[in-house]
Length: 143
Image (tube, rainbow, N blue to C red; front, top):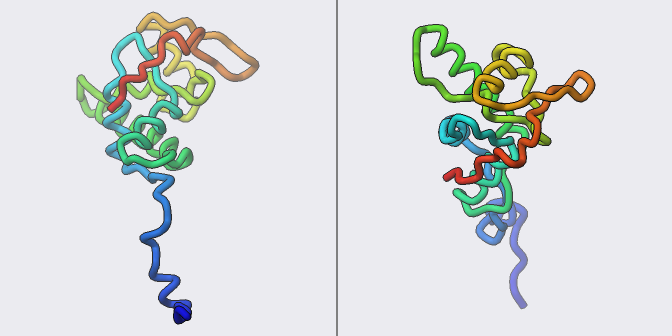
């Protein structure tokens, strides 16, 4: 008969557990956001799929991916304020369903203005603003 493992041995055992979720680093999220070309958009979900694929796991944490996109957006706006000409195009990263993120720098109107300048049509749904037909403009070649 096999001897039973102690609780401490069980606690230390993790090799048999599947790797199912990645918690990305902020710079990983920023790097993906930088890949989205002018005229195209991406949602947090596309970022999560790319992160999960990269790390060979089932999915990427939605909370941290969203928070880190917000951080990347504010870091880009900060750099722009300090004179940087090329910054992470955070306005091209939308919430699920094509919604403009109201917490990004410039708020809904600031982000909508940048998207319109790149040829996107913005539609209203109550207080929310969405990119019309965003599905046809999704950039999915993230790596």
